[in-house]
Every structure is written in structure tokens, then in C-alpha cells.
Amino acid sequence: MPASPNNTPAPTSESVGEFYDHMGLFFDSLYGENIHFGLWDDDPNPSMPEAQNRLTDRLIDTLHLRDDDYLLDVGCGTGHPALRLAERTQARVLGVSISPTQVARATEKAHTAGLAAQLQFIQADAMHLPHEPETFDAAWAIEMLFHVPDRLQVLREIHRTLKPGGRLVLADFIQTDHLTEDDWNLLTQGFAFSTLLRADTYADVITQAGLEVVQIHDVTAETRQNIRWIEFRYADHREDLAAHYGADFTTQMDRLLPTGVSIYTEKLGYVIAEARRPVV
Image: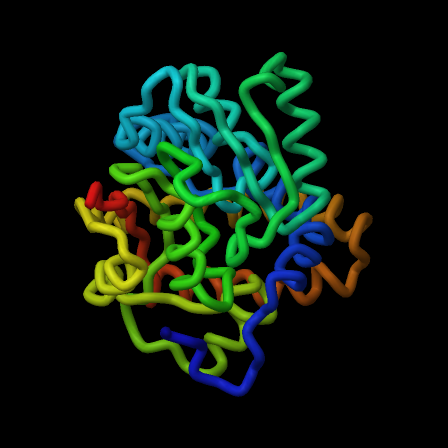
């Protein structure tokens, strides 16, 4: 498995959960309800929420869910993609997150929206899912695999818990150019990155997990504008973040964020991958 090419230990599952528990306000400020990138089009008056919903809708449409399907949401965040799926389909969703704060927020959202019968959220480690084999008809993982110390193990767990023929979609960052040790230190310590794949090895890891690759879509060009939106949102919410986290936090983020933006723009990309568990 690929790993960060430095001596900085990769984040553990528990530390990723603590990261999101602590950084909730930060991600709310930068991303809004959805803690993931969006797909941008030629709209002359774009917004990140519209772009994020466009990404979620692309994933929903790719899965072709039936009314009685049961979907596993791996790394469910605060639940917004699952809520949108429940509004568009009759499928049931089980969301898992390592963060208890995220699980509580997602559960509250489901109750508020009147969707508690359709949506359930639990705290669990994606590398050791607490489910019987062949439980789910479909699964998705939206921007979470780069956090886990062993993405192959997560994919094997998804394979194990999917029914034969079950569908999977992944939305994930990829590495497109050489990352220096300083790059990896920033990604690991500042944003809880653990591993990244290149486009030419992405399918191999999915196959190693026992899954069958359907297609991998490189949507890097459609995601670049997220960075400009995030920079704008940070500037707009900087004082609130300083009040909540302290001045040292924003001083550090003033340094980290531009470097992170450069790394993403120059050395990272974005893919949507479709796979399924073979029938035999």
C-alpha cells in the first residue's frame, strides 16, 4: 500500500475522529453543510453548495438505487449526502463515522428532516465494520479513503459487507505529481491525510480488494474551483475561527492554507470510481 514518504506517522482511525471532532466549526465555515468538494460547471453565478449537491447527485445517479436497497455510507460525515439521497430515493442508509460528534449531528439532522426511519448513523471504524457479510446492496465513500491508514482493508470490508453484484462509488483525491516530505508533513499534520494513490494504480487497489472496476472518471478539472471558494470562505470567517480556536490557530492556518492550496492545485487531482462486487 502507498504511504506518506516521510517519518511522520500516519493518522490512526482514532486520531482522525478526534481531528473531525475538534475541527467541526472549521469545516462548517469552509464547506457548509457538506464536508466534501463539489463539481463545478459553466454557471455564471456558481456556489459551492450547488456544486456539492451536483457531486452528490452524480454519485446517486451512478448507483441506480432501487426503493428497497440498503446503502452503506462509509465515512458519512455530518450526514448531508445521506439526507440528499433519502430525499431523492426510497433507499435506506446506514452511515458510519469514527467521529462521535459527526454521528450525533447526522442523527439530529435525520430526525429534524423526518427521515429517521430511512437513515441511521453509528460510530464505527471503517477498517472493522460491525456488520455481517452481504448486508448491503450498495456503498459509497466520499472523500474518506485518504484518511485511513489502510485503504485496502477498508475496501475489503466494503467487499465483505456488499451483496454479490452490489455497487460501490468512491469520490477521492489522487496524487498527480511528486510530493515532497514537507508536502506530506503538511497534509498529514494539517489535514489528517494518510495515503494517496495515483490514477494509474487506483484500479489495482480496488481489484486487490476483490471488487470489479466498472469505470474511473477523472474529474479534476471540475473540482479546481472548490479551492477558490474555500479561500474566500476562510477569509470571510477568519475572525469567527480566531474567536473559537484562538489567534494561534488562524496564524497557523494563514500559513498552512495557501501551501495546501498550492499542493492541491499542482500535485493532486480528483476521481469518481465505480466498482461492484462480482456476482460469482
